[in-house]
Image 1 (cartoon, helix red, strand yellow):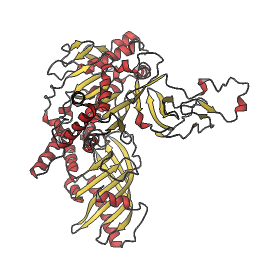
Image 2 (cartoon, chains in turn blue, yellow; image 1 turned 60 degrees about the vertical axis):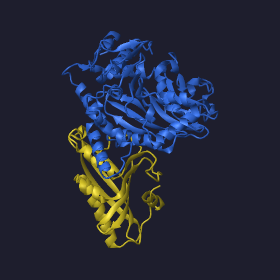
Image 3 (tube, chains in turn cyan, yellow; image 1 turned 90 degrees about the vertical axis):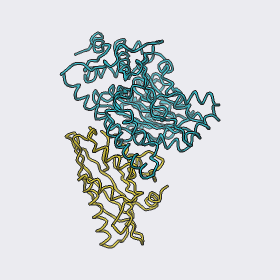
Image 4 (cartoon, chains in turn orange, yellow; image 1 turned 90 degrees about the horizontal axis):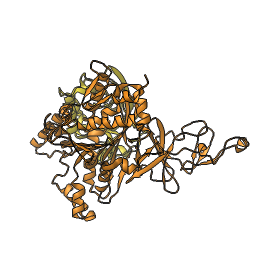
Length: 441
Length: 178
C-alpha cells in the first residue's frame, strides 16, 4: 500500500500506537525519507578526526556519509560516493586518506573537502558536458553540517531549523558531556562498540527512558552483582563502586522506579532523571569536585554537577548519559535491524579514577559482553517478533496517560509515576515529522 | 601494567620453544579441558582453572597490550566471572532461556616460552559454534595463555582471546566466555 498522511497519522493515538509503525517496510522507507534524511543526525565527535586527512564513516538514513578533516583543519561531511561511477571512496570504517582522496576505480582525485582535484586522461572529456568546476563532479557535501560543542551532525535537507534550534533544551546533554570536564574538553576513548539490534530503531529509544523496565528486565544481573558484593564484604573486601551500577537494578525492586521524572520535548527529545548515585562522598569524587571548583568557581561547578540526568534522547538517533560520559547513536538498517555505535568520552583534566569509573560502566553496560544490554536486546528482538503478529494491532502506552502536565511546550511526567510519557511524546513527534513533510522538523 | 599482561606483551607471538613432549602434552590437555569445561558449563571447575589474580581478556584491537584502563570486549577477574555465572544461571536471565550451547575446537597449540619454574606462554587457535535462539553463529580466533605451574597443575594467570572479527558489529551480546 502507499501510505497517505491521514493513514500515517491514524497510527498514533494519544495512548497507543499501531504495530505497523514498527514492522511495515514502506513506513520504514518513509521514516528514512522524512526523519533520518531530514532531521539533524549525529555523525561523530571532532576528536574522531584529529589530523588532516582523517576520515570516519557514518550512515545517515540510507546514505553513506563520511566526516573528514581537511588541510585547513575544517571538518566536512561528505557523501562517500565517487561522482564518476558510484564507487565508495573510503571503504575502511576510519583512517587517513593522506593529501587527497583517490578513487580506487579510475583514480579520480579529490580534495579533503570534496572538491575535484584531477581526473586522469582529462583530454577524453574535452567537448563533453563534464565540467571540473561543476559540484556534480565533486564529492557531494551534506546539504547542512554543523556542530554543537564539538559534536557533529548533518541534515540532508537544504532547509529547516538550525542545529541549535533543533536540539533546543536537549542540547543540555551535550553541554553536560563537555562541561563536566575540568578543562572544558573531552575526547573519544578508542573506537566505538558496534552492536546490531535485531529490532526496530524506535524500540531502542523507547527503552532508554523507560523507568518501569530496569527492575524487571535486569533483575538477574542486579541479584548476581549484589550477591558478589555481599560475598566480598563478608571476606572483608570493598566491592568496586562500579558493581553498584548493576546491583542498583535490585535495590529499587520492580516497582520502585517511580522517583525518576521524565520529560518530553516537541522535537521528540526526552529526558530521564538520574538515579545512580553518581556523586558519592569518596576521595576520588571529592578530588574531581575540587578540580571542577578550581576551573569554574564553586557556583558554576555546582550548577554543572547539579544536573542529574540519567538519559537524554536526542531524537531520532542519540541516547546520551552525561554523568557517565556515554553516548549511543543508532543507524536504522531495516524495519527489524538497527546498528548501534556506543561511545565513551574522557573528561580532560579529571582524575584517572573518574575515567576508570565511566570506563567500568562502558564495560559492564555497553560492551559486546554486557550483562545488562544482553537482556534489553533480547526483549526488543522478542517485541519485534510479537509485533509481526496481528493478535492485537496496538502497542500500549497507557501508563499515566492523560496525567502528564505541560509547561512551555515541555511535557512532564506525573509525580511519582513510571509514566510512559516519553513514548507518547516521541510518537507524537514522529507523527508530526511523518505527516507534515518535515515542516515541523 | 600487570605482571601477566607484561609477560604476554614481552613475548614474540610467532615464536616457539623447544619444549619436551611431556610439557606439550600437559599444555594441550589443559587447553582441551578448559574448552570442554566451557562447553559443558561446569562453572566451579571453570573458576578453578584461573589463578586467584587471573583474568580472562578479549581485547578490542590487536595492538592492545593491557586490559587495564582501556575498552575491552571482556576483561574479567574471578569476581566478575562469578557475577556472570550467577547472572546467566538466574531464573530471570531471560536472554539465556533457552540457554545457549557452545562447542569448541582448539588446535595449533604452540608453546611460546617455558620458564625454569615451569610457567608457560602458549598460543593456539580456536573455533567455537554458538547455538542460541535456534540459530548458530561462529566465532574464531587466537588464544594466548599465560599458565602458572602449581603443585595442582597449571592455573591461568591471563588468557588473551583475539577474535578475527574483533571490531564487530556483533549480532547480539556474547554472554559466555569463548
